Structures are given as structure tokens and as C-alpha cells.
Length: 301
Image 1 (cartoon, helix red, strand yellow):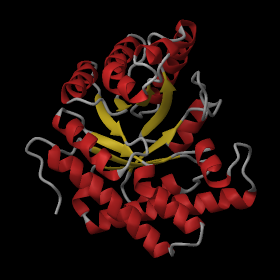
Image 2 (cartoon, helix red, strand yellow):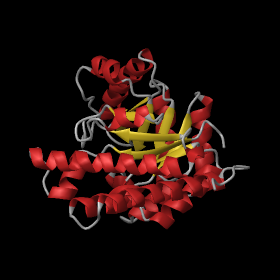
Image 3 (tube, rainbow, N blue to C red):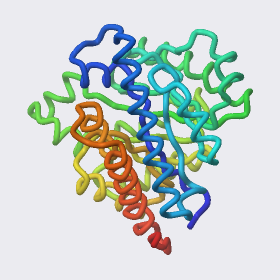
Image 4 (spheres, rainbow, N blue to C red):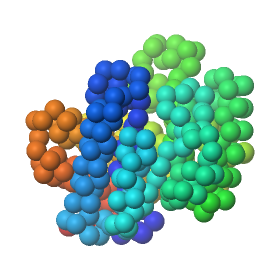
């Protein structure tokens, strides 16, 4: 197994998770926050159970978690040798905003291995908004590296109205026909000003598109991992096979691993051991699917 692999379980959702579980976007109640926090600890327990079952996954294992709804999860994972990633963006913003405001103190305190941003960036979109984002992200990248971390950049490329019109309003066609080239262009444009160590990218449809993204990243000293987008297991496994075979070094998958288990736990439909076992099995399954597709990469057994 290549020790450079990075197999991240992502559980950093904040505003989306509150809305999905409780139907609102305001501040969750203390009881709701406590329930979500307990759920995120359950997810971490699932990851740790997967590593106990398959020790060879310990080296590439990672977790992406926030300290707002998941306090203590990062520390718990780190104590078991898991790579820790933490978000430094304000959730739900169209134009990137850093959160917390005092980024240096946050990084000094938590020392995440991979501070992460989520950014919506279309090179044919809002030019001024893109300029503002590049300037802000350059500052974040510098702060991350100053504290010894590696910069994880989740890039989303939503369509402009004109792009969607060009494919007859079909989002599937946009993802297949237009988005891959827009992702490559966005990476290239951003790298002119923003050093990135790890790109977290949406599926790119064809192996050659994954290879191009991996090459763009590698030329700047970086690498690419695949995000899961909450898609069904079989679909994600297909994306993983394409990405692994084309030079991606791992994944960051969240809801596809833990959503059913978390919802079942909070609804009282699953006992905690069952929920933990479900998370562990799903994580092991995705890890096996990815590693089996790496050229000359054995599937863990």
C-alpha cells in the first residue's frame, strides 16, 4: 500500500446537517447540538473500528471534522494516529469567508494536519468574486503553511446560467460535458496565486479528466483526492475506480458512509453498536474499492 494514500472520512457538515436532521438553518438548540456531537463521535468510533478490523488502513486513514458540532472528535482521532483535517470556512457561503476570524490562533490551538476550505469557483462566473476569493485563499494558504499544515482545497464548480443553458438545463450533461474542463481551468487559475497541497474534487466522468487533474496538481507539488457527494455506494465505487487508476491518491467521503447510521442512531432505530458497525463496514468497503483500483495496489484483506 502506498503510504501517500489519504483515505478520509468526512464529517464536518454544519449548516447542512442541522437542516437535514432538524429542518432549520438557524442555531441548533443545546439538545440538538449535543445529539449531533454524539453522532459525530459515533462516526469516529466507526472509523476506529474499521482500523481495528483492518490495521493496514491505519496509515492512510484520516478524518475531516469541525469543532463546532463535533468537539473532541479530532483529538480522539489524533490519539489513535489518524490524520486530522478541520474546516476553516464559514459554511454555506457563495464567496469564500474564513472562519474563525482569528485563523492563526485556531491553527495554533488545534494543529490540524490538513486545514480545509470549501470553495465555489467557476472561471466563467463572477470575475470580481473570484478575485476576492483568490486573495482570501492566498492568505489562508500562507497561514496553513506557516503553522506546518498542508492545505486541503475542496473545489466545487457550480454552473453559470449560460453554461446550464448550453446543455439544455441538464445538470447531468453539465457534469459530463462541461465541468471537467472547468475544474482544470479553475485549478490552473487558482494555482497562480494559491499554493494547494491536496485538491478535493468532484467526480470528473472520464479517466482522462482525472489524469489531467492529477497532472495539474502534481506539477505544483500537490495531489488529488475524490469527494463522495453523498452519492449511492455503487456510483461512488465507480468514481473511485476511475480516480484511483488515473493518479488520485485517495478520497474524502462523508454521507455515503455515515448518513443512514447517524440518522438511525438519532431516531432511535439503530443501537449504537449497529451504527458503529455500519460506518466501519462502509469505510472499509470504499477503502477496498479505491485500493483495488490503484495500479499494482492490493486490496486490503
